[in-house]
Image (cartoon, rainbow, N blue to C red; front, side):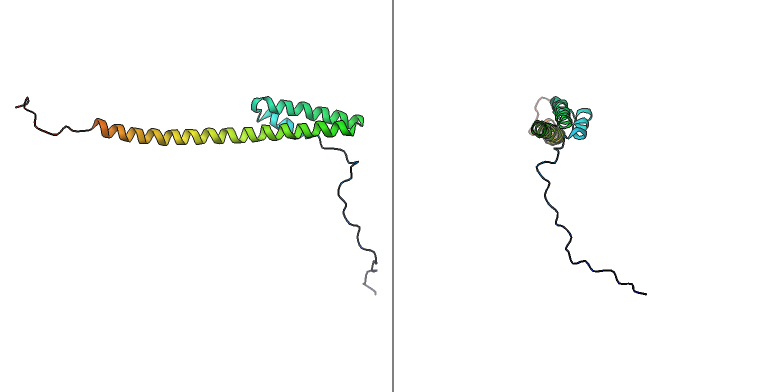
Length: 125
């Protein structure tokens, strides 16, 4: 019984980068997510509009317009995502620094109001 496999002399084909004829991505799912969950300054809605335009142009066969609208949809999606992530982090940082500042101010004011006047009181005697 021969268990050897036939040897192939040809190397496997190399992977090629995607050709220019490949259809552009429309980023529709990302735009829907930004519209529903993280709609910062309505950028998610704008990204959704451009994503739908990119999908329409891709379906109709206008690849250049689809690439243009896809690029705009990606840009607005990135802005909406970045704004929706950065703003809450900035707000948390401001609240934490405000609490720290107020706690220091409260400690100083407690020290000011509990100050005991030293010296002799002639009126009490």
